[in-house]
Length: 389
Image 1 (cartoon, rainbow, N blue to C red):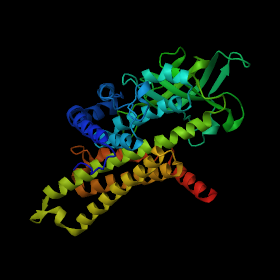
Image 2 (cartoon, rainbow, N blue to C red; image 1 turned 60 degrees about the vertical axis):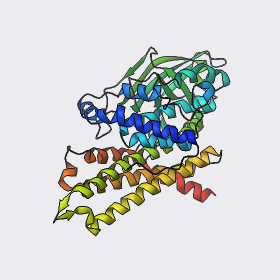
Image 3 (tube, rainbow, N blue to C red; image 1 turned 135 degrees about the horizontal axis):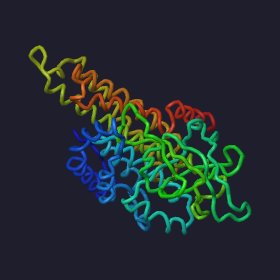
Image 4 (cartoon, rainbow, N blue to C red; image 1 turned 90 degrees about the vertical axis):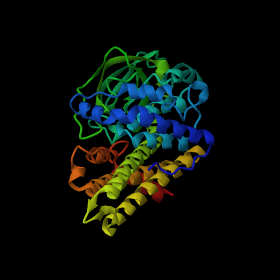
């Protein structure tokens, strides 16, 4: 059944209703076949993103003056959750796109916002977030991609050289929010750039063959002397680490919401099956052992939703929310793994087959514990903030 929601405004409820309608009519009929096809021929569902973009659902939390909808994060995340309950790969893509716009929207100059955000938020473009490298995932400060200024004193352009890894939308994005080293000063030597998708010297590796989320196409991004004008440097040189970490706080909430939607979908399928499946002359849901398992699954989904909404409300109020975002990401993704695994158990042998989507949900849940910072990193973030205070 649809999640019970208490939206902060009537407009927020209208957006949820619109999202549910689009998901039911436009996305649900496509997801199963698209995911199967992308397992052998990886490709993002670009038309699905266009549908969401035309509805204004790719730019909800950003300023209306630049093409956004000025919606609270509390509303935006619940839209992401609704999408994830139907098509997880697309919800992850929506979250990634929102992450790519964050640096310009938050740290960009007024001139940069006016020049870049309208296209980024138009609904016609899709962004990629280029932070990770093969040897610099959790350890962002270890990145080796370099940006060299043409004039150290007064640069008009930078040349970027290096390789980014595990990048959603690689080869399909219209722009790449990219972090590169502008000095050798460790974490203080990173900077942020917006690289056009058609830039010369930009190329892409073969898409990764993943366990799940097949329609979230992931691959390497190669920057071979890519020239980027200085007006696409976001923030100051050396400010990249703080920009990246601030963006990840918000991005983690997107993943928490998506994981919650995935868990809700698994729970709904399990409940329906428990009502319909007959054994020993009665529905299997009448057995207390299974009924209590479903109750625990419901508690896990509800607590995940509460965790990300709490963090989102802090964010909307302008209060610190980094610890709460880490808690939400940790709780929601661990719970998604548990709920999808338990949902397969409820269906028994049927849950292990591709006749039902539960096996896909279980595979998709696993990566949520890994990307946007592994759950071990989330525990590190939480414990440090606890002990620091």
